[in-house]
Image (cartoon, rainbow, N blue to C red; front, side):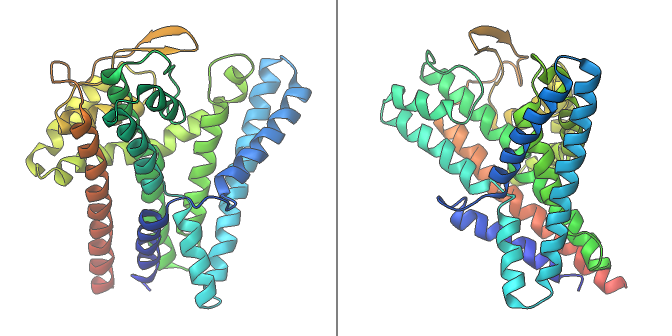
Length: 332
């Protein structure tokens, strides 16, 4: 029992790496996005431009979506005990919360366009995965954007949901009646989707998206710092763990997000490149803090190294979780 939930999580990680997000399939995040859009429409009709009502509606949307997603995951977990088909369903559902392969595919498509010197196509593909304006970016700026999204989205899309899965697997091994890996992972994905759709400081979203954005920041806080500590292990630099964490905290402190700057800084220091600088959003130029200042600008090899670090670190986390589960089983 101590190892069975972890085996399901490991199988889900393998499925994500093999298949990613198959086209034509209904994805849980798509369903969450549809619900958010419907709830947002209701909230804006009810609250109009009243900040207090908008904040209250944001809290209600967050509670409904995160709670409902967690309950849906918990119900799916209950089916896993009904037989092999239930276990297969659970593995597929768990894999849907991970974005390891899809991140690699998206970043790899832009890299291929840069390598082929097709910058218009590279800019178009980049615009699908970053929030900044891409129409006027040259090759070095495209590569910097890729390095920054590869590092930030590794935390948001892979390691944060994996952390909550592993925590849920631990809870489930103690008592199968408790919420387990899918309940926690889908609850996290709901908060993450809320942040990506409503977490903007403009218009009504300044108040409507506050609850979801703050919850997402809270749920990513610990996984982000665990990535910073463990990333040197994936690079074969175990003695740098505390150094990298300290440098990432220092460099990322100026970023308005408590997690984005820190995660990018950790990858920058481990990969040996400088990130940050000026980005254009909606035609407005914004200056981001420099991360690992003075190091070389990222090239294609550095971006590929970051993707490789993600694969290695995922394996390290699974191995560490297995060791903890084995020790727990032995001592119990």
